[in-house]
Amino acid sequence: MAQKYAAHLAMTGEFKHSDSQSRNGAGENLAANSSEIDGERVTGFWYDEIKDYNWDEPGFKTDTGEIWGSGQIKQLGLTIYNWDELGFKTDTGHFTQVVWKDCTHLGIGRSERGSNGMYVYVANYSPPGNMLGAFEENVLPLQG
Image 1 (tube, rainbow, N blue to C red):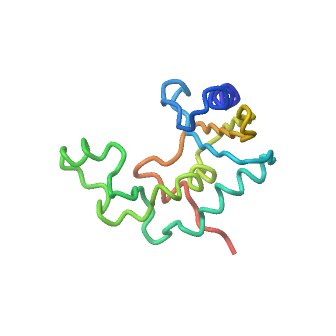
Image 2: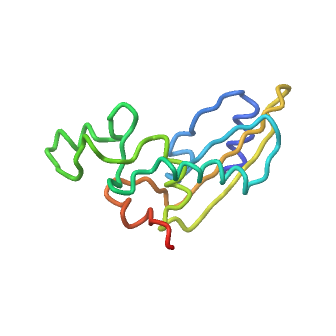
């Protein structure tokens, strides 16, 4: 699945996440680089977002303050998080997906992107991470 989507991105020149249905609901990380790098280095790029993760306020927050799917949750009047200070930002979503404890399956694909020589990397994770209400038990602090 990851390899197929990496080939699709390389062929079309697009760089966007696939729709959830096409990956059977799996989580997804994307990367691109001007030279070929190994999976360990790509994963390291994603993992390096750890420096920006807010361990004091685990949760999910985007740069705009919008929460994926939060419109419906807010309309229902549910109180799950302090919606203004959730701690998680979209710039740490790759990291949290990489370390998500409940994830048991990983697929990685790589493809060269046409004449411009860019390499595209796709990782799929199942079950997916970055789920509201599950950060504290799935994104664990480093142990001394």
